[in-house]
Length: 124
Image (cartoon, rainbow, N blue to C red; front, side):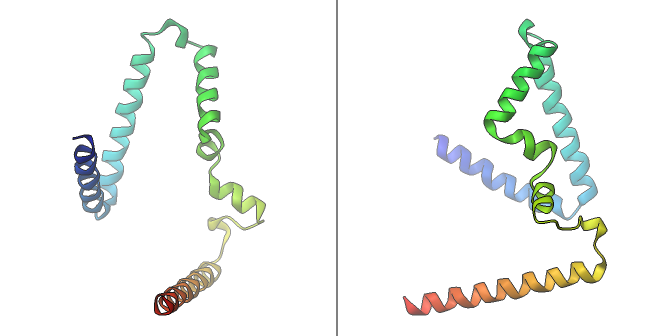
């Protein structure tokens, strides 16, 4: 019963996401409204618990984010951290030719991976 319900909503989510991906502005507005309503519900629910006011709320939130590994990735972002480690330029700092060059490299890598996959299938 639970598996079929999860499967249903998974397929529904795929259909909605595909349909909305063709309308990015509508997608952004609907997604924004959903996020705001979600956080409004969290905020109003937290008000029922006197412990969740002020500093205690902030500390609990930080602990939850640290334990789940979301603190840094949400507030800083993985791509920013990785670009700093590898000393890459930010996308906005790259020229069009640099972006195209990286895209061409990615295409060649994917082609090579496809070739290797085909070769492995033949060997099996």
